Image (cartoon, rainbow, N blue to C red; front, side, top):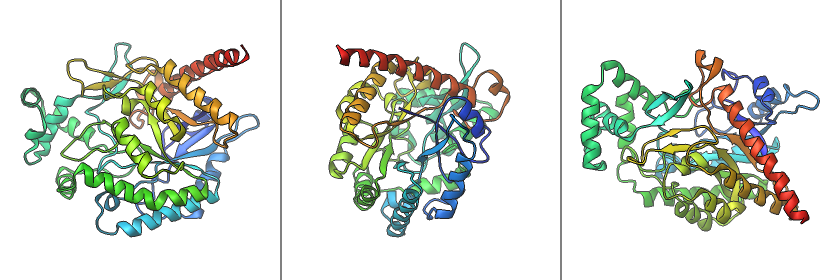
Length: 404
C-alpha cells in the first residue's frame, strides 16, 4: 500500500514535515479554500503540488497522491438548480488534476454533512481522546435543540425516552457543546452552520427519497466517470458516516448492496470506491473482510480505522485504536495485499493502493494542542506504525507461501 496521511493545507496544525517524519510518502489533501462547485484551476493545483513536493528530501519523497475531496455540489445531489453546470465544472477539475499527474479522487454523496459525531473528545481509559457517536445524544440534539419537525418519528420509542432524559440533564454548556459537535461538518473546511440555516438546508431535501438520491448519483457518475476513465483517474466514493439515515436525510452508500448497485450501474473501472473500515464497520451487517474479497478490483483508496460498537445500542460507537475495535485488521490487510499482488501480476499501473490511517486518538503532547478532530499528528503516527507493521509481516508470509 502507498502510505499516506491527510493534510488540510497551510492552516493545518500538523505540518507536512511532521507527516513526512511519520513515514508517509503520500499526501491526501484538497483545495479547501475553493467554494464547492467551482473549477480547480491549473494554477491553484500546481501551487499546492509544488508546496507539497518542496518538503521532499533525498530518500524521503512526498507526493500529492490523492484528492480528498473534490466536493459534489448539493444541487447535484438534489438534481436541482445548476446541477448541469456543476457537473461540467467537476469534469474540468478532473482534467486539470490529471494534467498534474493526480490520478485518485475521493468524494462522497452524503447530503449536507460529510460526517457526524456527538463528542469529539471522549476520554479513553489511557487518557487519550477519541471521536464518539452516541445515538440517543444525537436524537436529543435533533428533537430538542434543532427541533426538526416530526423528528421523533425517526427514532425508536426507547431512544426517544433516553434522549428526553439526557436533554433534561444537560446544562446549557452541554447543549452548546453537543450542537457544535454535530454541526462541525467536514474537518478542514470553512463551512459551519447555525441552527436556523441548517434547518433551511435540511428542508430543501424534502421529497428526496433514497431512490431519488441514488438515481442522482448514477446520473452524476454517468457523466463524470467516462471522463475520469479517459484521463486515467480513479474515482473513489466514500461511504456514509455513520452508515444509517440521520436528520431525515437519505443515505445511499452504507452497505455492500449500495456499493455493488453503484458499481454495476456505471460499470467502468474508473468508477470505484474508498474502502473506509470505520464507516462501513459502524454497521453490524457489513462484512469488512468479505467486502474486500468481493469488490477489491474497484477499490481505489483505503481508510483504515476501527470502531467499537455498543452491543446494547448498535448505532452508538467510538473510534478505537487502529488494532482495537471490531475490525479484524489483520484479515482485512491480508485481503488487500492479495489484491495488490493480483494487480502486480497483471501489471496494473495502480498495483499499489493508497492507504491512510484514518483518524487517530488525541494523545501525548497533542492533548495540549488544537487540531482537527480525529487528525492530530501523534495518534495517526501510532496508527500508521501499527498498520505498517501488519503489512510487513503479511508480505513476508505471503511471499513464503508463493515460494512454497
